[in-house]
Length: 478
Ligand code: BES
Ligand code: ZN
Ligand code: ZN
Image (cartoon, rainbow, N blue to C red; front, side, top):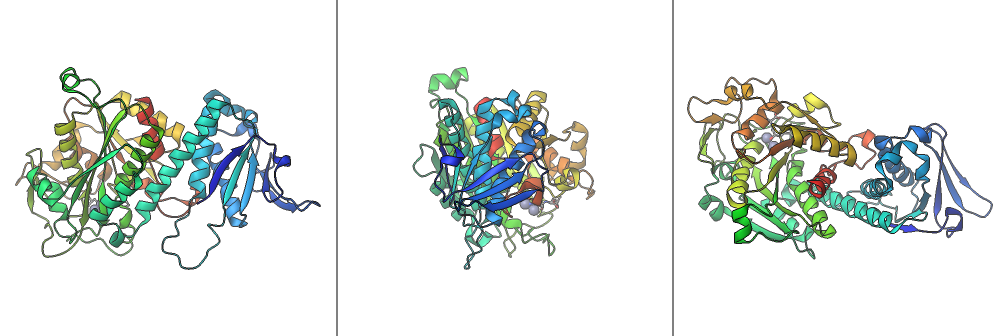
């Protein structure tokens, strides 16, 4: 773990053990590591013209500083940012700047070393000091950024863990551990309760595995738990956040091919994002009511597995013909959505899932896909994506798409009855729309494109920890 702090000293007044990162306006690839006569290490780093640095470039710049320190195996670095010089950022305010700084220093410092027996040198960076005078409000924003970034790293740790070590019951344990010391509460429905709640889709997906499904509920009543009177008048309704918790997706009997399966320990990234988000919300003490739901199951292969062609009854009562066992995420989410609406009548519902490979075909790996019929929600999420760095981009959720899921044997099927591969990302959202609450605004976020980092992210390989920053920002603002 890298210790990240601030200091109101100037860079030049620091102890000489810190390597000083000095930003210059030279072109971005330019850099020099020099040792002064006093034995002070100075790393000069070109950033390009400061007046051209926008929100996206700023995040990349912060991450590049940390990545550079790692490449050179520096143990302690200090950096001073003259943020006023980044004139394009002024309109977003200094609180945004320092929060973004905190978030991205944390994200970039992260390394996943759980399974390494030899020192790779990548985790050598022990300390980062940010120099300069911060106002009380900026100091608070910086600390908020650190908490959000750290929580996204908790999300990454959970998602990066192998399927064997993160089965549904282990995911429950990891949830409780992540929230230790906070006032968020965790409630878990096991097999018997899932059956009793009639969550037939969640049950079907997990029945081939040894470790059976769990339904994890995390509650945070920052605005006060609604009383019976509140419930009558509709006050203090929570925000519902639902995250896909497939702890390993083998594809089931429609088994995935080589090259498509080995990363499916990250198929609970939606769920782990909820754990990180709830941790951040609780640590920040946000005065909002939020409940997260994680339908957790392993999509495994055995004589007990659901078969293609099986028909399961959802909690909503609608029957589903499972035409493809690898389209399992939408099944567990459907029951979670019904459960959330029935037991919590939320004021808004978001679901987050590594739902389709087709989302990557549509958007590449730079943004997650959002689907909603609520124009306002779409605008809010898109703008907060830009603000937080967890970019999202809309796809349509028109009624025209619904007809392809009309099953001849059951009410609906989980993939198009003609097995069409076109518009697969929208198909996933469309399936979920059959289970969406009628009056509550709802948005579906397919984070498959952002499940793992890509080189331009300047982050450690593996889980990207998205969209924790977006969800926290959403809860703060909604
Ligand atoms: N978990 C996968 C989707 C996925 C693929 C996430 C790649 C991240 C990276 C999901 O359960 C799945 O297998 N979807 C199928 C749906 C298809 C059978 C309609 C897919 O995308 O191929
Ligand atoms: Zn699948
Ligand atoms: Zn999946």
